[in-house]
Structure formats: structure tokens, C-alpha cells
Amino acid sequence: MKRILLAIVILAALFAATGCDRGGGPGREDIEHAREAYSKGLYLEAEKNYERYLQDEPQGRFRTEAWNRLSEIAISVKGDLDRAVVLLEAMYLELGTDPEAAWRIMFQLGDIYAQLGNRSKALESFEKCMVYAVESPEHTYVTQLRMAKLYRNMGNYDMVAVTLENCADSAKDDDAKARCLYELAQSYSFISNWNQSRRALETLLSLDGVKEQTRVLAVFLLADIYENERDYNKARELLQSIVKTYPNPKVVETRLANLPYIEPQKEIPQPPQN
Image 1 (tube, one colour):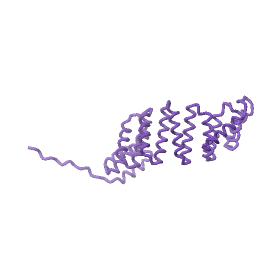
Image 2: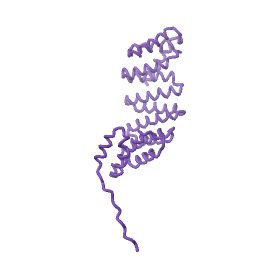
Image 3: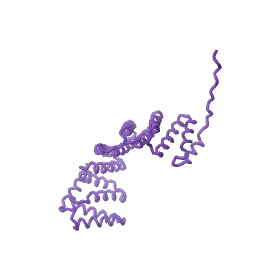
Image 4: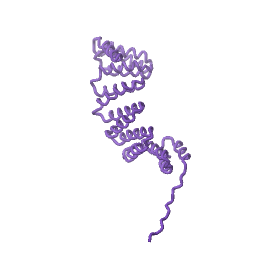
């Protein structure tokens, strides 16, 4: 609550100034100086100029750029996540009427809250993302994957399953569906639910438009499941099928070398019946 109030105070202070984005006025100079400083890696100087631009140009054309750069400096340069939260919340108050901008801001805010360990606020942000993503299958898919990861970190595997099943059902293409199914299978494997994990992987491998990288990762995980079930021959067959396509072939080669070999059982001929 304190952060929201602070964001409102910041936004109010920025709008207290008067003026517009003048062609050669102070605001234009501020944005140009900010860009030049940013390009040279002079981030503190860029930060001051972007802040001044927001103060001087409440109706300026480059306000979105200024907000984005300020939050980027706070996160990537200073590592000041608390300041980033305040900036993003103030940015949301100004730009949140645009669904695309609102989704981007809320998604970034959710990630930052997750890094700060505030999972309830992170989930709240991602739930808002889902509202703004209703017209975008891509945004919906990305948000659901991120929410599932958060639920998994919280140990809430029921919500992981629900979220990823919805993700797979609403995916815009086979590759997106495969990503959701792979995360679902991996999550089930973490709690040793091999049957559900295998079912998700088999569905994934039945799809046509799946990228090779996703497919080989699915085969590798499926081999893990068969190995855990002591079906070493099936595990070997799967690993041999990806030994040349897995990102690190030596990992597959090592796994193959360490797999126990079980002689296939021969069928015993049945005596002829009279």
C-alpha cells in the first residue's frame, strides 16, 4: 500500500508541471541529452534527464520511452527493485488504459515482486496480466507459463496442473502447446507422478508443429521416466534416438553408458495343442 501511495505521489509531482512537448524547448533538450547519456553508458546522467523530461513535459510524446528507461536503469543498472516497483506502479497509473502497455507493465511488475519474494503481489500482477491478455493468445500463453512457474515455486502443484492444462488448451499453435505440456510433464516429474508426466509427454510427441529442441527435451524426460520405472531397454531406445540431436550429446552418451542392460525375454514356444 505504501508503494502505491508513493507511486501516486511521484505521478502527481510529475504532472504538477505545465507545458507540452515543444519542438526545441527544455523538454526536447532533456530527452536528447538523456538518450545521448544512455547510449554512452552514463546512466545516472541519463536518469536525471529522463526524470526532468517527465517533470517538464506532462503531455510529452516520449513519456513512455522515459518511463521504460528509468525502470530499466533501476532494474538492470542499479539493481534497485524497490525503486523499480514504485516506477512501474506510477507508469501503470499513467499508461494503464492501453491494454498492451498495461500487460507489459504488469508482467514486469509480477516478475519483480517474485524476485522480492512477495508471491501474493506477484500473482496479483499476473492475474491482471491475464485480463489484459484476453485478446492476445501469445500474451495469455506467456503469462500462464510464468504463473505456473510461480505456483511450482510455492509448491502448489494443483494450481500448476490447472494453469498448464489451460495453457495447453488455449495455445495458439502446436509449439506453444508443446511448451505448456513439457512444463506440465516436468512439474509432475518433480513430485514423482510418472503416469501423468508420461501422458503429457506422449501428447506432446504426437503433435506435428513442434520445434526440434522441445521434442528432444521431451524425449530425454520420457527416457528419465522409463529409467525410474526400470524399463531400461525403453529408456535406451529413446536416448539412442536423440544422441545426435540433444543440445549436449555427451550427456546422452554418459546416460547410455550407465544404463543397466537387461536381456530381452525370449518367448517360450508353446507346445502344439491337439
